[in-house]
Length: 493
Image 1: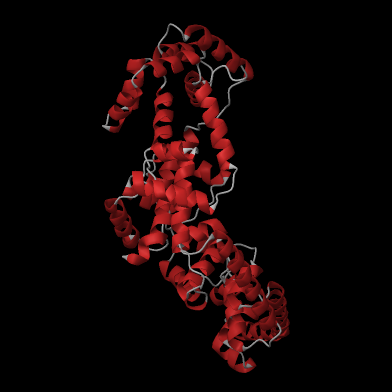
Image 2: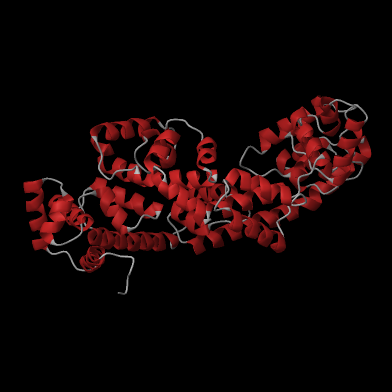
């Protein structure tokens, strides 16, 4: 026999399930299954026997028949808007069909392609039109708010209704124009600033702007003269919050988020070194670069008896004492992860494989740890637990126990470690057991109470839907079930 571990009924059922899964569903099949549902209710085992298909196949045929009963030909505005949202979110035609509920997947696919072509044509037509001031302002704003150094021109093009190439070319021209204008002003502004500084040992930026017919900010950003600028190195004894607040207020007024800060302008406004302004801004945000010198300073000051609050003040005006405390203890007691050697792994396997038949896992684990005194404890515990969970002897113990009773004890609050010690098996096996049971707890059908709970939790959640947290609130459905159910029935409540 080709499958000695399978019964004849199991083999025939698998063959019937495979052949039925790969055959097409006809209208006659759907009508027949619907008739049986009206006669027997949703007894899928009995309906599957009547139609010679698996129960799940019968349920799928009936669900498809129910959907076809609701299918409409014309597209409403609400359906088109939902389909556009599906395209924007990257949802496929099958999932879009389930969300809309009144259109088959092939109809959703055809309409999706039509909407995409229409969007590309509109973008192409608009890309050939002239740019107005509003479009240019939106383009500059979208580029300035892009996260990181990479600019997604495709996304920006969609926002503006233009092609990505058109947006990229336009911004390149704007940037080049701004750079040329800045270069033209730079020499003029620098000469005027140098002239004032040499005469009065200070710079009146209002006067410079009036003399050149520019704004103060343009003058601050264009100046390249750095003569006489002071250094601004953090010293806890001489640090002044008035000076720091003056710089922070200038940045807030001229470069509000998400506009990037021009530290050349900041340096000219404060008349201090540019790199010092950058570092001081980081310190005011509570950022500390833990260099070797900074770590050595923390250890030296703490070993001399200084409090962590005073050490934190030596490093930055805003860093917390708790952060310095954690850094100090991490430096004094480093925990470096060292993986187990292959020889150690083999030795552990030999010990556990030969003793697992007659020893409880807790005793065996203690024996292994005692025999490997020089191994990294974290790596050792992880390997012993994972290998113990894979041993046939402990798998047999779990198989021979009352799994349902164990699961109910864990769900009622009994610790897994206590049960595992009583059974003589690794607690990791009980963890895996409960994980495997989690999905089976989620039934496919929705009760009215579950639906009401879903609507209440979803509408109470702020911002974008977090379906994982919503499913945890519902308790009996997974995130995908909650998402599909809400989009199907949410508009009815």
